[in-house]
Length: 352
Length: 261
Image (tube, rainbow over all chains, first blue to last red; front, side, top):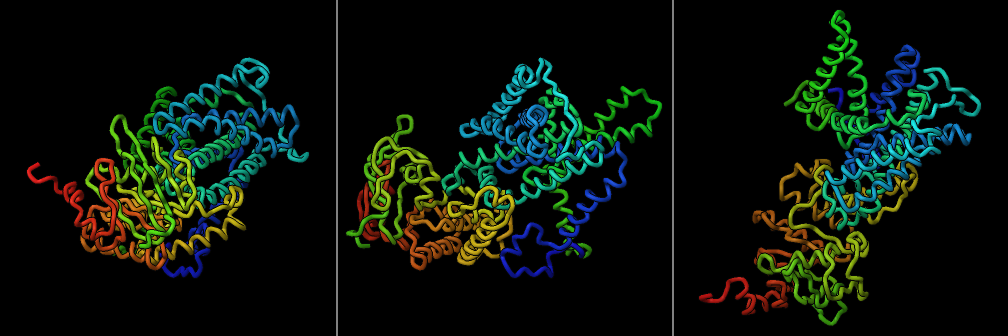
């Protein structure tokens, strides 16, 4: 009744191809932006901002990047944590050692990650599916090894660099609110950019490659070019995410944070959130980062006297159970669930 | 068809072997501008292999390929062949199942889109203009194929006959100089076949496309084609107008077998 295309009369193709053709969607997005930019920073506590929202945003960005590659272009990667690490280390080195301005350092971290991703994406031209997954696994191990053993990078053998204080044009970014805005601005810009990419020609080429690569090439889509662009864009996003999370949340680049487990975690995010959707990356990152905290807090209140190790285990059990539950209810992820709700809303309350 | 004109496509003495099996054995054929040409033959005759050679999916062992009078290298990436102006549909449906009808047909135009990466990301300037421009062209094709009502449905959910039609649309969207159709009517009922036959003829007569198609339904082939090439076990056994082919003893033998054999 309230959410529908009916009555939205599009007179030009440009209007039909607008990013959000339905007015309610535009309103919804506006509300979300106001919430993110105004309400949350002024109402949430410092703990919420720095320990919950920051990692949520950073992982959303990383998941979005992985979604371009795996969800849209259909190339599985289980080396994305390593690309985040490349972004983290290179931006810290650029900023800390060479005094490159912060925005350029973060961007530069993305560029270095993008270069690494493109190199490890070259095997995708010959192999696909599980075989490609294994070759990206190699990327994970090789990059981890290089970052821990190349002394010039970390200055030692433990592979840790502390993040210096952040200044943007002489203005220090120290409080959680300032960090929150920094991350949110980058996230918003890159999300808009990415959404435009996937709804345009590049996104169509990616989807074509995912669905039927031989046909795509005969129709005129260059596999070489589009797959490598997918790897480059995807690892650029991962690199920026890695750089942001290191500057604002971890406060030190440490290879332990970017291990294989995180790669699987990111893959889990896009599978639960919804492959091949921008929105799904946010749902998935939210699910994987916010839900454990939520479960923990709930368990804490209902099982106050239970020893903490049992509580930790029951958190894992509940979390795992919810993942299985969601995937059974909607194998295509939470974004599809959202889509279904919207479809229902179009007919509600008279679903004849 | 005037045989004196320069052929649009000429393949000469193409041979290709798959692990000891000679799929094509010195086959030559020509496609002349403006005609509807059919390649027919029993199963395993090498028809689809021939299309794959033309498209660059397979590199033949020997032979020469000329397009618009110029020789092209035997080994060539399929998307470069597409850029030359050869488009194609597939025997088994090869739509991009997760995309809408619109999206599928738009991919057909990807050779014609040139806005750069950053322009696409900002969706401003050339990129937006281009998207709208190509959308118009695609809408024209959707009109032509009478599939307006399914333009925003995911291609994977469409019934078989419509999927075939969308695939034809995707090939047409490239505005090719040569359109290759691999069994465009396979598995269809009479009505659907008639629809596709009409679209093929319209594309040929109204839009002046040159078409080479593979088809098993002899009735349709005899009705809509100007010229027919018959393959059998990788060899060309006959070539000519439908009337000539109908009377050719070799063709009858290939299709019906020898008496008592």
